[in-house]
Length: 269
Image 1 (cartoon, one colour):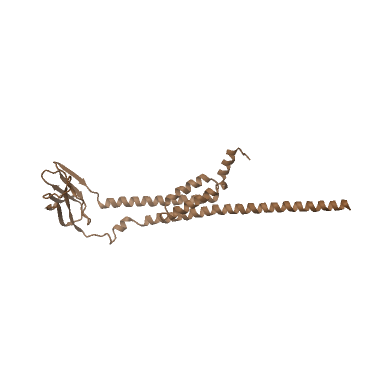
Image 2: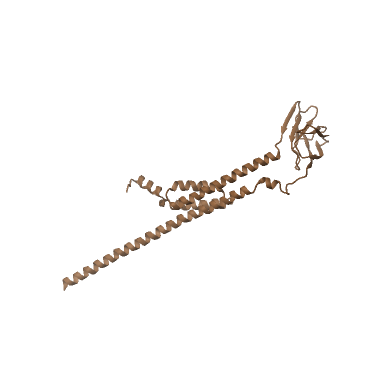
């Protein structure tokens, strides 16, 4: 009876031990599954944040392309008449006081035809009324001062002061045409828009690499470049930065990071 009882006891103990080991394995597998599910969710969240930030960058780039400065300046808000009053001051370069008696001659810069002439008043002020908006040359001369010859296109804002220096000779200056300045602004705006769109596409690829989980450093570099997309000024970069922080938290899920870590520790398994 004793042997039978011992045999039954050992059998029950063996069954309990097997059930216990099985339950432990099940629990461990459940823990691993939950752990990897959480990790995958974190990396997915990082990818989503980077994608959303990059999409905002794309929208910003396309808005920059659609808002052409030339359209704004040609709108009714900036339209002006075909003629303006050309006015300004002639000032002494040392005292800053207005110079009286400066003779001013206004000519057509293309044809050379004289359009008008005048002389500055006691405050150094001059004015040409109802002058056509085109390229003009203004000559300012006074005995004992260097003659100024300025080529410009008049506008409603008025002209910058003529700074008269004592001496002799001729000083020529040319102001850029508004059209050339506008062309430069349009070019810069277009380049910025294209750069914004390209960096936004880099961000989309960074999100793909995040989900893929192969190369950690390259993914972070790509995400860093996508910050330049400037989605809605700062909303996009903030989302991308949040994604990069989550990437740092899950760097051990990237294959190259694990390989480098094992190599540095001498573990070749």
